[in-house]
Image 1 (cartoon, rainbow, N blue to C red):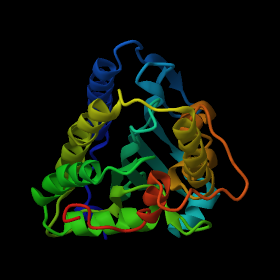
Image 2 (cartoon, helix red, strand yellow):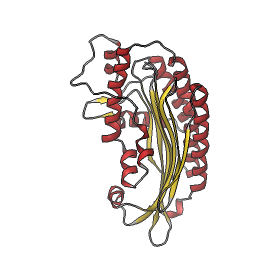
Image 3 (cartoon, one colour):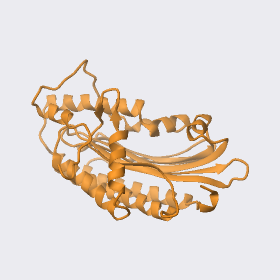
Image 4 (cartoon, rainbow, N blue to C red):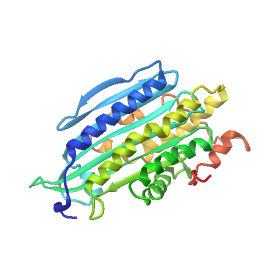
Length: 310
């Protein structure tokens, strides 16, 4: 790709991530009812900054964060090697969220929508740009109708742009959100797309519109599920199971997650990067759920499944 094909949309995407952050926080606060997001704006040494929004100790949401960040400057050496480029300048912005509900029957959810530009170090010319993002859901108890709804909303968004998007991005999600060291998926999947670049049949505007549509559809995909499950009765054993499964979530974020690793390598803000970790977790040595139990049923379904036709 040559720079002739590239058009920067830095300000447009920066505005989008702020707008979708506000939209998602407003919708989540309405469901939570008792707690509001704590807003902490911050600046990054050199260039950039962001807005960290954290909600905690609610009746519905035990802990959650919806963060916006913008970073830029010289591309770190580790990232030069990863992207196989010489010394360069970069710009990256995005919104990232994780919501950990209190009720074990309500699933944890993660989403992010991001944009990256790469520039020639000497001339400052835009050399490369791409979009990434997606959303995935991690239940503690399996409700197939919830998984179907989450996937259906995302499929409908994808189909408005390209019929190949949903099957492609679902497969990427199933592959990416997988704890290889345990041979199990993190949850029931969703969408995951990365390094989506413009080309002759797909303009930067097309990709931007898709990212916006996916971002604003997040609340349609997740909030009906949260509202349905948030008031279920649960006991101490079900809560313990939730905390064991949260441990698997932590393992993925600290071992495999690209966003976490990118944030640490680019000297991102540690508190914002690690806000995705749940407040209470447990690891039980060699734990296996009782065969035939609802807990075992969940584990049996932690693999690629066609949830829409399940």
